[in-house]
Amino acid sequence: MNTLILLIDFIGHQVLSENYINNRRYQEVQKILSDPRIDKSKIIFCTTDSSRVDVRLNELEFMASNLDIKFFKYEDDWTFDMLSDKLAESFDFDMNPNNTQIIIGGCNLAGCVTKATKPMNAIAACEAGYPTTIYLPMCAEYEQPGINDVERMMMGLVEVYKQIKKYRAFKITLENDFRYLNLPRTHGTL
Image 1: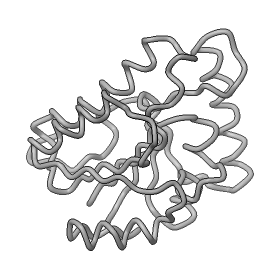
Image 2 (image 1 turned 180 degrees about the vertical axis):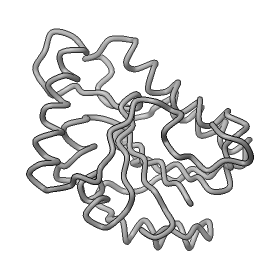
Image 3 (image 1 turned 60 degrees about the horizontal axis):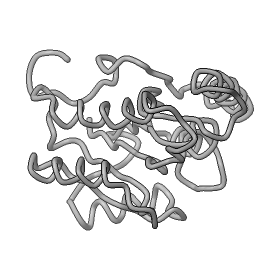
Image 4 (image 1 turned 180 degrees about the horizontal axis):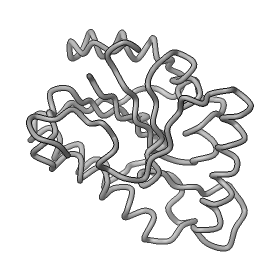
């Protein structure tokens, strides 16, 4: 199965958060990039083309290119159909609900990652029929109230649950363990 790793607004609002959650998100991307058991030919990273420079994500993109891992930047207003067409054109990457899972990380967990004004998010992926996973270690929450990251993420998870119920998107998986992401592997198990 192909895997699209969607990094939505990944740079986020880092000044509003603690170093741990910011470092953790980037470390999780690096973990996927560097794991020799993952079949990188079946993975593509896609991220929004932000006007803000994300030095860390740019460095991870450079690492990905040295490992022959595909990395693609898309516009905020794109749909999954538009992305699928561009990935087929640019990389001959076949993206459809029958052969592609979508793993999502980014900012804000309860907003753009789950369901917001942007057309590509977890609810939209699930509604389009894609196996969809929100990978919590690659997410941050800056918009919810709270005095620290734990409280903001706790409030964000409540909002995620409400959105999943509202849109009856019960096939969305919330995951916090790298081993259960069902990433394509070269041999053995992750």
